[in-house]
Length: 304
Length: 309
Image (cartoon, chains in turn yellow, brown):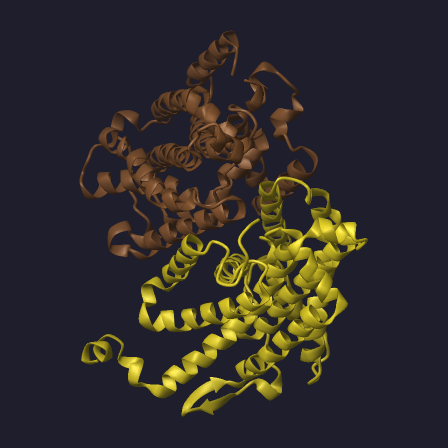
């Protein structure tokens, strides 16, 4: 125990641990919103959308612009939070109908490469539209301050995120398991051909799922915008982390993605305390171990 | 491959280039040769083995750093340090490859990306050994190779020998077995091909030649940086191979030429638009021209599809 307390002096600091857990969980929440869309799109269309981080970035940038142009009223922030993800959803729809639809039958490698091409295109367009400087979004007035959690200051905006997390997860669960549309999505992840043979318009379902997944990424980005510096390059950061989340949880698995996101969020917030120098290595090392032991992830299904 | 006559013409033209071209273009040609080798090594996996690596920059960087560290920390002369580059990269490819080739398709790509990012982070964070963000500077070749023309000839010879070796690999029974594995792993296993071992050997060979390209680039550049291992760098050989066409041995070389010339033309005028252009070309090639630009030229002898050689 002495050795432990020497190595990790914070381990007896209860309040610090509480705050770290809470901020880890809120980071995990942002990750969940991005990853669940990525996982959903993969489950149905079998495309690993590498441009998903770019959608997250566009969501954050749209938030910046909307908060700027809307009148300075208390409701402006919430309106922006609703509208920004819709813009991303439209972008996703255009991409699905214009490009991805043409290549569903092609080599999966080509699909990966195409979505990579999208990263380059979107990042340049964002640079041209918003310029190279970092942007920031101020938090809504009611949530601008911080509250005291176990004697430690904790930003109240994160409380919103923490409160929203279970709501979003439950709503998604209801959609997936209690609606006809959710049933179709789950059926498509199991056997797309059979679903088509049963008379379901699979092509339309693909578009809907892609739009919905894009919306989720945009929502994550818009919600995260007030907590980060909105900058070019956040697409790559988010993509690699979301990638780790879906691989750990299992591509195409809803519950797995939720667990993976919270795990990675906690790992990031504690990794900085425990191994400040190697927290990213830790992340990828865990992903590598999962891929070696259970390539289909904790809760995913093995490839047919 | 090229007919003997056009090969001779090409070699004479390349050998005579320093007489006609200013140093800048020799440097451009040197870069084309190096990235052409990197992309050809990458394409051994993608085009011949049907394996997509998203972390090939790791082996390029391992080679570059191995050579640079030997020169800077141990004072080893360049001509002895360079051969170590492919060896270190091959060892790295073997260690990671053992795990990577157990997976297929998307998961293969992801695990290779994860290992690539680990290599990047180690290089980035291990400041005392690798210099971290600052990289390692002053990694120049000896004086007699320092001029653009001298290094151009040197790189040309090394790359030429490496390409010859890679072509021998592709043309060997091993190369044919690898194509069989790409086309139908199960059938390949039925006729007695050890699928995983073939994939692993291909992975190690590909890693070794990527490392050689990295070593060559380190001395060309005079410095090495962690960016060499970053995942965006891993997409470079991919884009190059795709541009030229992954279905032919010479495709990535043609692609390297197109890539570098376009990069020079476009980034000089509009550096901001370069990624936009690159991304659009990649998307366009995939949606419209699945055979790459070499495919556009039809069935010329030197653009023969892999399967029919």
